[in-house]
Amino acid sequence: MVVKMWKDDPQFTYRNSKADHDMRVARLVPPDAVADAATRDAFLIRATRQLNSQYEADIGIISGSGGLFPLGILQCLASSANDPAIPADVAKRSREAVTAFGNHVLQSAMVDPLDGGVYSVRLGKTWDLPMSHRTCMTQARAARALVSLHASTGDARSLEVAIGAVKFAEDQFATPDGLFSNQRQPTPDRQREFMWTREQLEAALTPQEFALWKALCGVQDLGNLATEADPTREFFRLNTLSMRLPLAEAAAKAKVDAAQAPALLESGRKKLLDARLARLPLPPPVTVGAASPSFRMVSAYVALFTATGEPAWRDKALALAKRARETFSNDNLLIELGPPVPEAVRDARAFTYALAIQAALDLAEVTLDENWRLWAGDLVTVVAEQFTEKDTGRLLEARPASTPLTLPLVDRTMLFDDSTAGLMRMNTARLEAL
Image 1 (cartoon, rainbow, N blue to C red):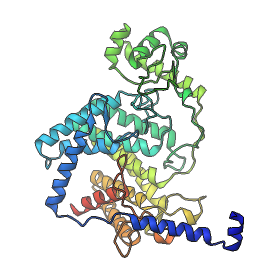
Image 2: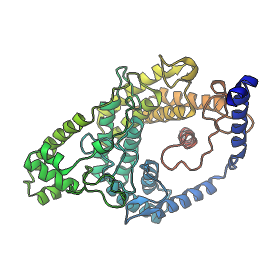
Image 3: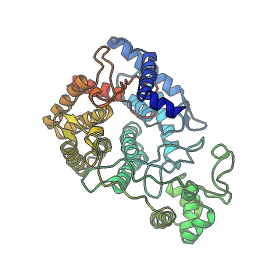
Image 4: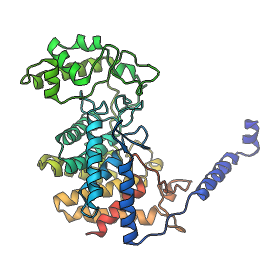
């Protein structure tokens, strides 16, 4: 029947798909009317109160955020805690919630103690069972959010994790052309090989190293995953690694000399990382950089510079931004990927423009170079001209010239990461404030 339809009317599939898409677009909720400043401020305060109420301290999660690491919510609450426009009681509650949540999740297996990378999604209902896949975008996004957390709470752990995430991205996703790819070559997921039995840990470490890591990660013979994390006991007798205790407390529990604990931690880390790489060799790297992760890393570098004051981070941001701008500029437009990707499919989407504008504004603030601010303004103009629906003014994800479908951006439930519309609103607000 399908073959006959193709023979009788080869254009049927195209027409039918377009009709389905047009119906979906027609059902989308129209944009809200632009509210006055007082209404927007009241909405912001009300939304912040609601976010605070979603934090459940007993299980360490933000209700409704699903299994993805809610970096956007974390950054929002951290920023609210320091915003003078937020009422004192709301700011206080935001700081309490983000401090408690940060302490909980940064001590969990979502932060890899062996290579410093941050995982983006959990497999079970707790943060102690992450999925092993990681991307450059996650590392850069985490670094920026955790710097905001550090500014709000002053907790050294959040800054330590932010630096570890950026170093992991440099090690895993940097490309020979001086840019960043979003991920390495895809491979089948081998979750069990990512985890450890007590015997595997004991075989890889000296007795003192094992005692320290056992105390630090809560290693058990039957596995250290709670029932709610692994209700079917699929990972029976397996352990995930995490910094569940401060090093001094773990050393005391393991009856290890506190002065020797840092050296034992580092030597054990190297041995365990080598053992894991022997079981799970790294996938081949991608050799060509992409625009989105490269611009995102610029913002991550700038965030670390603002938090540490170390000029090396600013210098890295500047060098990467210059390289990315040179590589991904196509006249006044941007491309997502260079050759060998065909020209017909390498046009950058609106989200990439939003990341580039954010990176340019971040860089302008720390270099005081007006050229970056001017470039950000030029890109905003391009988005306004090329990425908006003519009749409604609705933001589009792709330029009409580069896609046969209209892709409006009106998703109001972007709980887990930046949305294109959200990023563009923040960018335009920053430009208007200049």
